[in-house]
Image: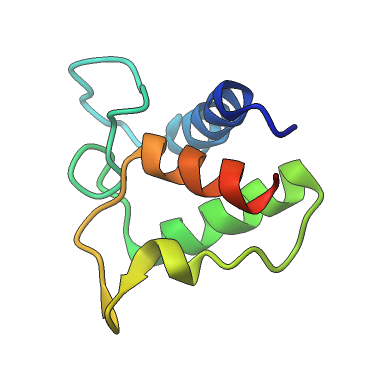
Length: 93
């Protein structure tokens, strides 16, 4: 699965499964613009579990997710689904 749109659909599916029991009050459906922390209230453990779930879905272990979540030695403040999809498209090409 290397098509970027397919990857984004897969990421949205994985996230939707993860948050289905969270009682989130989402104004809109989950899209590429949805952010993990601000929109979905992800905590660090949720991000780790998301990374593992994505690797399992893709059948690839050891993807360098740290390059997505750490910039200049500090954690980024938030990440959108589109950014995750772009990262995956680059890393799985």
